[in-house]
Image (tube, rainbow, N blue to C red; front, side):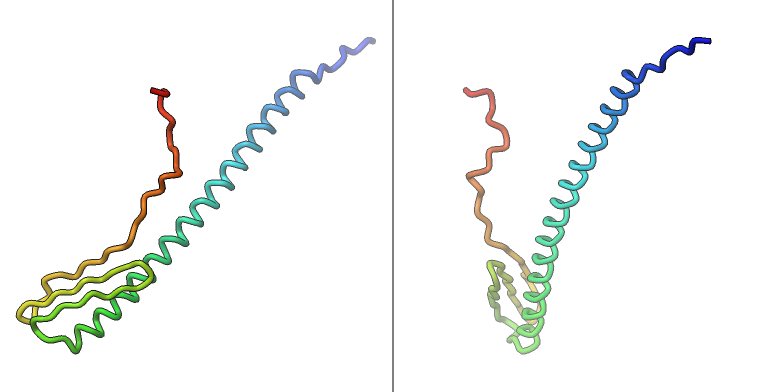
Length: 111
């Protein structure tokens, strides 16, 4: 009895395509996770700085006059506090920002 030969060509091609797809998805997953990690660290630093400024603001508020104001600065962040008749009328956080002119998101149609 003659057996028909097993053809592995289509199966090998299918496994190659699946391997390429899985490798691509793994690389994209790793790149996304790394970008998320960097963003989380940046956000944690911003929150830490904001809470430190709030703490300094609370300490200033404890000894402040009823009609006084202050501006607290730390590492590029600013907290502005204003009091009128012993009531807080302004408690504003601001952060220095510079536009990134080197970033080219989309070159357009070349017009």
